[in-house]
Amino acid sequence: MQSNSWQHRQRWGLLRLQVIGQLLASPPEAGALQAALTALAQSTWRHPLTGADVRFGFSTIERWYLRRHVARMFGEPRDDPPAPPLPDPAEPDAPALDRAARLLAGSARPVLLIGSQAVEPSTADDLAQAISRLGMPTYLSGMGRGLLGRRHPLLLRHRRREALREADLVVLAGVPCDFRLDYGRHLGRATVVSLNLSPAEARLNRRPAVAVIGHPGRALIALAARAADPDRATAWRAACRERDEGREREIGEQAAVAGTQVNPLALVRAIEDVAAEDSVFVLDGGDFAATASYVVAPRGPLRHLDPGVFGTLGVGGGFALGAAVARPGAEVWILYGDGAAAYSLAEFDTFTRHGIPVIAVVGTDASWAQIAREQVSALGDDVATVLRASDYHVAAEGYGGEGILVRRDDEIADALTRARAAAASGRAVLVNVLLDRSEFRRGSISM
Image (cartoon, rainbow, N blue to C red; front, top):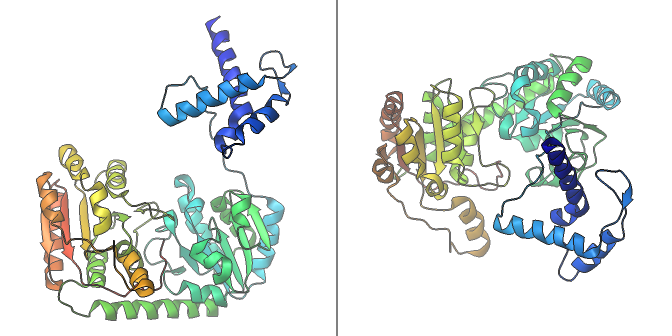
């Protein structure tokens, strides 16, 4: 009897959600609620127990809606039915994959872009092998970073815009044509194949020649089975590689320029050189974190975390805590911008109490630099972008961690050695680095 009663409540709960769900998802504008409720009261629904057609009065639907709306606003407990399990991502459409394979076979200058959507822990290795078989110059973003390790022959990190403008085919694997691709304009006149879980995102701002709706990682694996060619477009790949290596040389030259404090490029190149092969990198910041993304290479799949496409600052402490627990023994780095650091600096208390030996590096330029660069250029005013060069290392010590201050380039190597030794001994450590201002990222969007 109790079981039947629970099932009845669950069915009624699902029906109520079916009736008012659209209103909850998109609340009507001011003055439009009565008309929306009237329309629902005139609709016919299926009784959850008998299956017969049934209507509900205006006042009943209004009560259901207001109760749920108020509960969502003020956190009152509800007896909602349990959420249904998430469905498996759709398998990619075979005919669409066949069309994509034909386009790839006829391409002389293909480029592959891979985003977070494409990566699953269970298939990351298979996906990396599929990319190798496809033979396309490849750029990784978001959670896709690290998928090919540090030095895969197909992996490119620089001059993406130029490669896209010269490409005759661009395959977007879980990457929408949003602001990061200038709403599709970066793709020039290339033919576009979009692999995406969402039909809307697959066609966002730029209609592809082929849209393969389904899990993009699985779609790439299936595409490799149809169109494998590890030696594809060798001259095009060589041209992309030469351009990428040229940018690396430019970064090396810029990193060697000495200033009054620390060159941010010299700092991130030093981190890249000394970080362990099992490292997990957590980026939390704007300008400094994005600078690091050009230089610090994730060592393998699922070893990179960042604030995401919308720059949600403050994720550093929590992400690092989760990464350290998920990968015990791994070297876990947080690369903080000083604007972002304060959001989760208090997690050093958690790190200390639970023996989580995180290495945090704060790039302190006393500025919301990513905002200031464009704001000052456009408006001639740095209002609300100026910060203090705070003693973040002292705050970490107050929470029980170890703090290190770096003022000049020649102090970087010793500081990182001390930081890694402290982490190896089980202590959380924060390296506060006073940075010179840099124009390295002028005009860039790095997400």
